[in-house]
Image 1 (cartoon, helix red, strand yellow):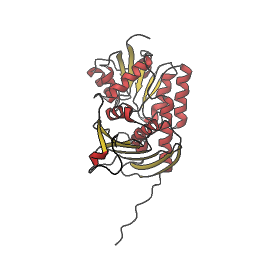
Image 2: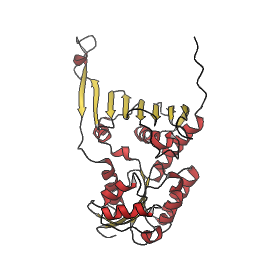
Image 3: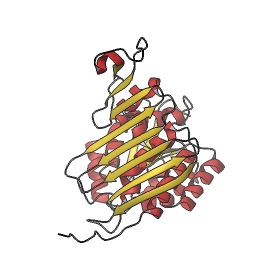
Image 4: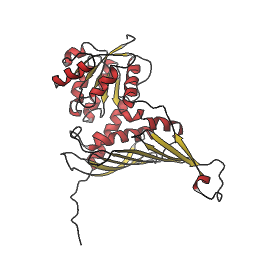
Length: 324
């Protein structure tokens, strides 16, 4: 493998264009081209980044790795074309539209012996990185992810569009524990798919997660709260800030006049960095053999499986009529 990795981007829409922008500036990588079904858009992005716009087959013949940011229903088809040619893939989340498609992608990567990474970008969030040293088996996890409505992403339910970010984090934080019970509710409001959903997931290790996602909110919210035996972590994923509240080591029951006498508050800190850039860096390092893949196909499949399970148990019922 050459020192500088030749990389291409498949799909340069709202998210893929940022893949291309970062890869054009990333040490250890060289953006050799982009492709998109919207050829005019591909040419525009290519011109902005001093690279080339070309068709998919041509691009696959020039690269050592690709990132894929096409609509979810096309993930399997496009991903297989790359993997079956022995080209490592960073696939935007979700890994695929169905578990059968996810399995085909994983199997193709295994046959070719190449990396398949899934773009669960919140793994690189500043607040998550800052919390890592203090994580100690969270027992109750509460997530809230709200966003204003926009047409992009409405080709799938909000569970696969937004909530899957938090479901991946929950699986990561619980060590990949088995989900033993899932309860969920939701509504379709502005699209033909679920636009808001709430899920309660119980795990075999005793952990419980409560996740809320909506794409019909007036404001953007991305919060994660973790309760564990030694304290409570409150993380704002939107700002990258967080805090850890724990009992003071010198506190004794019955002492202290106020909360600060009992509880120690630690501000969580990690170096500020663009999460997508970190994700792309990790992919480049993995393909070059410098590091392991952060979120591999199996983890991407696990997040997809849990998201599909949540979507399957959602009960959509009409609102009860007002009384009185």
